[in-house]
Amino acid sequence: MQKKVLIIDDSALMRRAISDIINSDEKLTVTDMANNGKKAMELLRQGNRYDIILLDIQMPIMNGVEFLRAMKEASFRMPVLVVSSIAGKDASETIEALELGAFDFVRKPTGGQLGTAFSVFHDEIMEKVYVGCHLGVYRLGVQQHKKEDKPAVPDRRVIRPRTSGQVKGKKLAVIASSTGGPKALQTVVPMFPANFPYPLVIVQHMPAAFTKSLAERLNEMSLLHVKEAEDGEYLQAGTIYIAQGGKQCELVEKSPGKYQIWENDKPPRGGLKPCADIFLESLVDVSFEEIVCGVLTGMGSDGTKGIQRLKKNKKIKVVAQDEATCVVYGMPRAVYVAGVVDAVVPLDKVTGTMIKQLGV
Image (cartoon, rainbow, N blue to C red; front, top):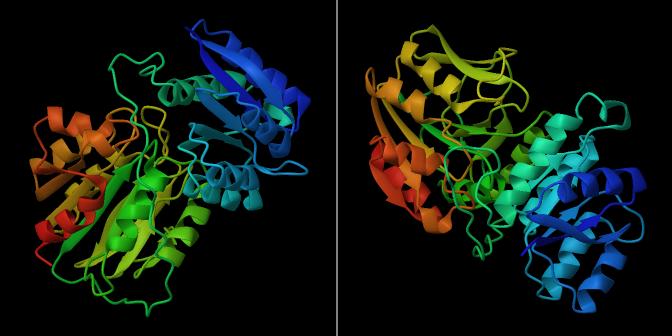
């Protein structure tokens, strides 16, 4: 039986483009379309149910964020994939949409990009629709699995004194994540205590413009200072850095114990920019004595090769999110199969396990 899809977008052109993508696959069918959230809610209240909803953010009458709030209030539980532009306001609202329950997002091409970027947009839509519809992985060789009904992320919005200072003890924490990662990070990051004495670098697969909004939102929720990584800045203890979307992030040791972030334009690896493997490989040439890496939900195997290389040169511990709490059990599965994992734990235990491995 074909999976049923609802498309919500105020642009007739985008509704048609997305519909053509979905209907080109024999496993999927677009059963309804709406040009704003209010009309979509009317469809849901009439008893229509869908295997996935594709949701625009900026719409008249009821926008995407308002629609997700209305869904939550009415207890409608269906996978939602945000299809968003890259405007600054849209980026922050996309992060809010992920917070409200959307499992991931796809960057919408602009009108001028529909010709040149359409094939990339097509593949991103299909990969993530397959995940949301429990169809495994689209056009990938390794089968991965979608999990549903995740527990709600607790709201831990706080105003706390920030800690900072020079890196101590030559220890570093790293997190790699992809599909489902922005929401998972809202559980993991706020659990780091205010006195956490080491820097933490997060490599989350996201395009440019979105990582700044993600960092700002996590900063509001967290005890530590969370920021988007900037090229040339030095790591500080008690600070969490989100690698920039659309860039490769590496570390360079300019002088003993002083670690500088290098945000650069090296090409994507495996289509990824930022790529966790590239970041982890850069740690081979710096003097950190202990590294703890958390590998969270995501498609593919990014992070595995970097960890394997580090294992040959450094003392590194790896904490993998378990299958039951992953949106996509891909990246954690890859490190587990590679035999480089020290602990496999549910999402809400990742932070505590990383802290324990660091000896804090």
